[in-house]
Image (cartoon, rainbow, N blue to C red; front, top):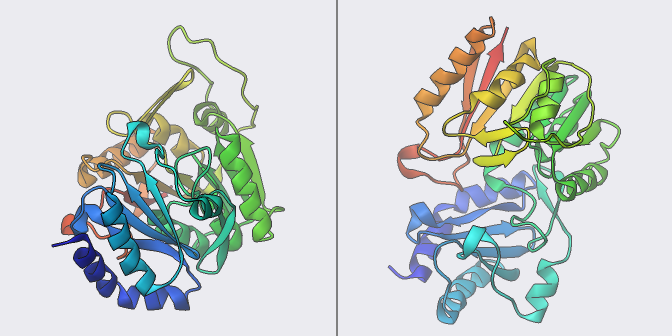
Length: 335
């Protein structure tokens, strides 16, 4: 099938979803998930009044881009931005026409379930400032944060933290190493008038989390530790843990395949008895049940108990083979 045909089919299958999104005051979602829908490495999203086309394996030809644009424009006449990320480190490699380039580099406001988020389709980072497949996580947090304290780790632009604040959280601490991401998070808080509830901590997650858990801050062998913000030990009603697949710093190594427990253990210790911790793992090859079992064992090694578990599945705009989505999210109740 041609690109036009598979895209037209994907749009038709999402008709009910599009209508529900409109009713929910949501204007950002996935339109085409190429890995599952027939064009591996091609993703198309709606971000407000723009279609964002992204390629991760192979650059589109001019004809392919024209074919895709014609189908999208017939559906809704929005701005079209094409980000070719098929090169090294998934960074945007192509230039766009002046109008598309100007729009892509301008801050926009998008909405998800009536919550405002800042978006920029091209900037110094790689992604458009809100991960759309995490919508289910933001919805859970919004629905379960009333009068609670919330810790949002690897917060990026603080979408989870903003959702918690909008859900009535008493206090939200957002932790991320990137000043750029936290600045966008502060903008999100301003857009939704929740700055009084949100705290923004620029820090490597390891020292922040270990201090909150009441553990000593250490580092990798022979690594000189850089300065880091000092935090007092405290526990939270709800902890959200969404680390990247792999990252390395003087304080430790984030490795979702081989050492999720290195972050999960202190996150458990920072969770109040009777509280909940939301754990995320976005590595496709990690087996869901094996990962879950390792989380339960880690909790029990701390002398605590998992009292409940709830899996959060991505919305239908992110289809997966056999309903086995690479992004795994589980909520654990802990005593």
